[in-house]
Length: 88
Length: 216
Image (cartoon, rainbow over all chains, first blue to last red; front, side, top):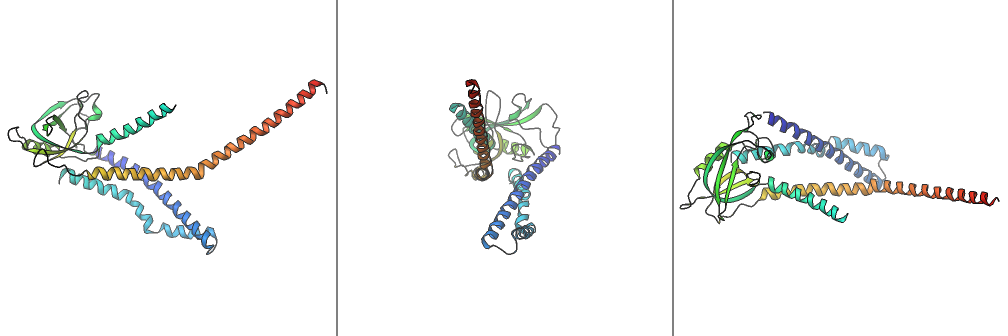
């Protein structure tokens, strides 16, 4: 079980690093898009509050929760690999 | 300098390529001639042996390892080891070593009445280090000319990795053009400005000194 614990531990750390990087990156991309949108339309409201409202909406969105796939997809892949290597 | 740089680049890509060549699965068509087990004490070649079976004592120094002897379709022999990869590297999550040995032993055949098997494995055979490829699965095929399955998993893994590397590289390059290069240019400009003003001061000093020596 020590080997399993080690794999889970290392995997969790690596995936968490990827998750954090991805979520920062995704938020920065969203911020850039919102700023570009405001610059084009010159509204509504001032730039700061427009971007803040857009990011607040992004924080509750499905798109942001999809980044959790960083954890889900490798877990499913490991499950499939175990099945196909040993039982198929 | 050019050759050093080339050497580094070639070495880097050779390491990457050999890593994948070692780790990704390949399929051989071979006839199982015998199976056996042998006590193994990994030494310098420890890197090329897996660890103890999942669940057993990981600290035991020596252990018995299953082997599968084969003769391949092209007439050469190949010996595969048959070890659990367990939860470790490479991530095959293979726990059914004993079952695989039972299947391989059941598939034994002679040259007179051959039964060809496909053997999926990873790793290298190297006589100088006593290392063996690790068999992952075996299944019967029609004959020595039987077609191997498409390596779609390898294609998938390599494509995804290449896509990820390309994505990171493109973003890094964009980031550098936008954020780092202007800063470097700024630093260079300010350095040049400092140099200019220093040169100006120096020449003023020199003129003053020359005037002094002439005793104006």
